[in-house]
Image (tube, rainbow, N blue to C red; front, side, top):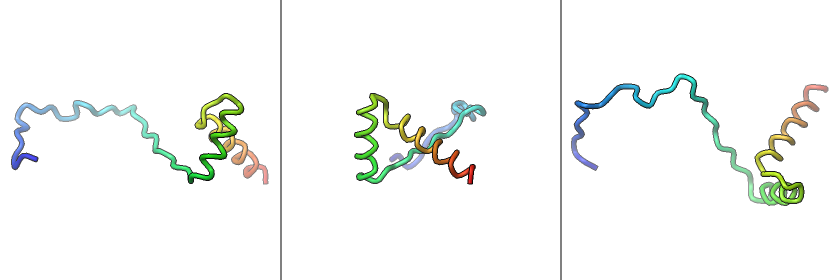
Length: 65
């Protein structure tokens, strides 16, 4: 790392996007991931779609009670 940096030609907010959304990563425990991966492969879908589907079903169930 340099002791000093020159920002005289820098442009403030160059990479700022007010419409940007942040998607945080979700980490599954290894046993859960293994189980979900197996089901996803059997259904020929990606694990993200499967997890979202399961979560939506649980959200609907919780909202009913």
